[in-house]
Amino acid sequence: MNLWFLINPIVAWLARSPFHFMISHQLLIIQFEGRKSGKKYLVPVSYHKHGSSYTCVTLRSNIWWRNLKVLSHTKIWLKGKLIDAQVDLEYVDNQVVENTLGDLVTNNRIDAYFAKIKLNKNGDPDLGELAQAAKLHTVLKFTIS
Image (cartoon, rainbow, N blue to C red; front, side, top):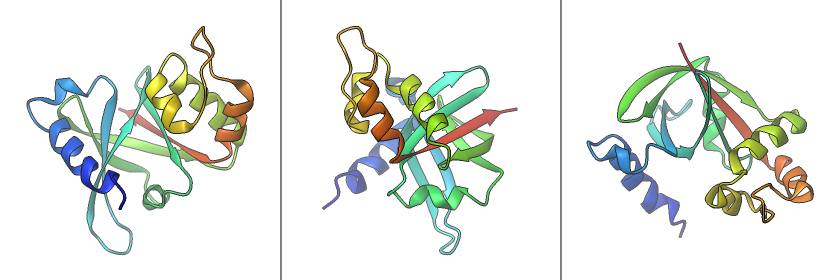
């Protein structure tokens, strides 16, 4: 059984509650409807902020992100608020994925662990493992207007 099936609804609830401050410094929740099913999805992801953009990564083998391929905008829960965001995906250019993944995991042992990238003593990712991991991930970029 996939533990995320049990954990994600709890994290999504927490992120939308008055207790969001416990996790919103590192997680946001992507809210979208399934292309075919119309089912509402709430997916927690770690993010890296720069400017008015928030970048996240997920494994390409996870199929949920494909629902976002046809969208230009979606909703995200960020710091307890539901916000409209432009969404851009990158899953073709591995160099862009590698750069983004490197930003996300540098000095962040939790994200590095989930991406299967070792961090050196100074907090930088192992470049060989980073390059390999980039081939397996998709970048999701959310821009707030």
